[in-house]
Amino acid sequence: MATGWRLIGIVLLAVILWRVGARQLFRVLLDVDLLALVIGALLTTSVLLLRSLRWRILCGGLDIHLSVGEAVRLYLLGTFVASITPGRVGDLVKAYYVRDRRPEAGLAAGIATVVYDRLLDLGQISILAMGAIVILPWVPARLGPPLVLLGLTGFVIGTAWRPTREGLIARPLNWALRRLPGADGSAPPLPSAANVLAAQALTSASLIGFAGVSVVLARGLSINTPVWPLAVLSALGALVGLLPITVLGIGTRDALYVAAAPFLGTSREAMLGLSLLLLAMYVLNSITGWTAWFLSPPRDRRPPAP
Image (cartoon, rainbow, N blue to C red; front, side, top):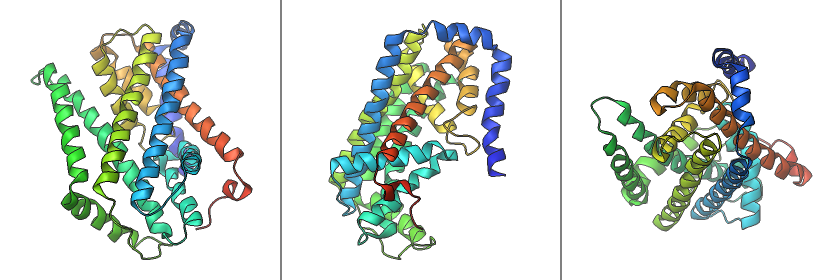
């Protein structure tokens, strides 16, 4: 059944290809600027490194101290597993690797690092996606950027404010962790405001790079849509790609991009081409993670013990 659900995205992509036309799509992809592909790949790798450093900072806030090299390698391992699981749930594998290296911290602390990492990432991406509200006929387009800026400011302040971190994040998380199978019952410490603010800064930097990938690839396809709508669409695509019916957003992100073509004043084949180029960037992340897995010690190439 799980395999069948994951095939939904592939079937959806096949239907989109049939409706848009594979020949038209092939022509669009043939005209892509190679320099845009190179810059997009470099930005994609930079975003991955920024996120791994953010995870290291969050680990430090939970008394799990990793070297830069070890944090990057473990994050890449998590990226590889996440890329082959629906909804990127495989990202939790990092918690088991952390537990093996820091048994005194326990599995709960390892899971907490992944949850905090995902919370910051999805929080900022979701707020950027709020800019799509301007497609409503009664919402002026000029309200999009101020709304997102206000939301990001509130999110950063909220996660750094102790009552929020403790009451709305740490306590519910610890309550859930104590009830997970295999948990050791210990509650991880509350990350300091300094750790959270530093992690938020890296999240903002990675968000800019993440949106920049879409803009660079769009320009490489001669899509002249303004930067702001493309950035918002990239955030919406990331959220849609988390639906657990596919991996790497195959099909779901493609459907969103094709549906957005009339609003952005461009063709459906160009937007589908952009979505597929973004898929190629996700595959690049997966290959980078697989390389880290392949070069890792034998114990890291085995599934972590539950």
